[in-house]
Length: 271
Image 1 (cartoon, helix red, strand yellow):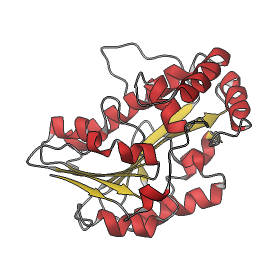
Image 2: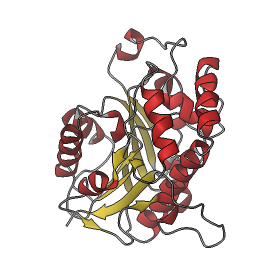
Image 3: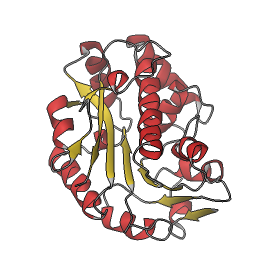
């Protein structure tokens, strides 16, 4: 089942600005996707010329997402996912990973980028046994997200909240923490929180490149100290190995992990 949950007219009122690079489209470019414009490729290539490791960051982030979803489905028995900050589809999206493991899995994607909405038909594919839906909403409105997600997910049952490279777009850290807290308040005991975001304190070249990018007029993304990322899990039970550079979160044994990168993440359970 597929169900686009959008606010009537909201997408039509927002036009895609192809003259300004957008982080979701640049990320898509780094992941090897094609859903971007020349301005995004130019910005992404300029960024990677200064900091070539950004491609490793992007792909390590996607690998972390795949490993956490695998754990949630196969070991924690989670069958519902709320993925906020979906981004543009490339490979191993949440529903693809989860439904390969359990076709009954139900997923709600949330984003407010008009180009992501335009590509919702790509995201909105599901096994007959499960469901995939798309919600056109902003992270800053957690109550609306929870209310709309409940049309597809049973929020009385444990659900995994996925926040992958999205909280860095919230400039105020206290606001970011409040959003996470409110979202988790809407989920029952036994639910999980997966967060990964760009971090400070590991790679000075990455920090310099990101700070320069934020000054270009593109949608900014703020790297945060690891202790701030860790504090987003306060009140929850962090799974081993805790909040770490994402290549070191339960790495695959059949492929060598890169060294530590400026991208930290973790997975925690709500008691």
